[in-house]
Length: 218
Ligand code: PCA
Image (cartoon, rainbow, N blue to C red; front, side, top):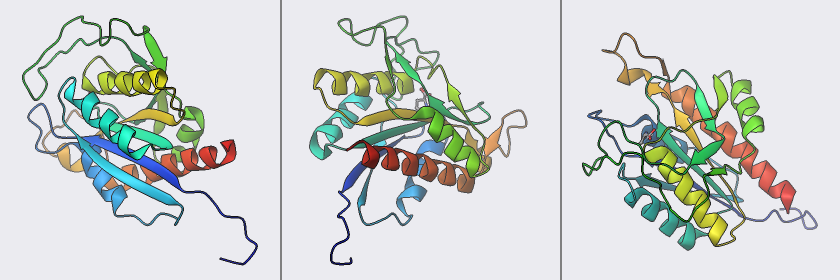
């Protein structure tokens, strides 16, 4: 580094993906996270990868424990949304568990609040519109999504945002749902997919956007 060049502060990024569920051998989100983890990032970026169990409560515990240890500046959780066409940047998490299938521990909560003292919803704090634009600039389909569902992904996003709110931790946090990987739909003629390379490029664009926003804000 040149003698008088300004020092860029370290940015810690927590990137999570889920383990396989619903009988699928792989979860697109974790496959993409692993591949993103093999990419080269600038020296001031520390990327922390975490695999999250597709289990109610456990998912929140695992991620909030990592947040308390790492104190990340940016948290991007990802999950698979088989059937979606685009990378979906979630705007909001709602305070409800309403599972149409059991989680990986066999629990299937119906119409239950996640936290009976928490608000009805939390908004993600990532720059969601900028992230959509950055992913599209990589020629990868992306959109803002106004529902993360009512299964473990919405549950995790709600739990993370609630944890940050009650501990007054200021960081950018949000969730990106990913379509199936192309390799997952070879025998599913009615399901859309994106390639792993496209989704890796999309997540890297999302990370870059959030990192720039973080550095600008302080
Ligand atoms: N997708 C599920 C949970 C785990 C995952 O990858 C969801 O959309 O809730």
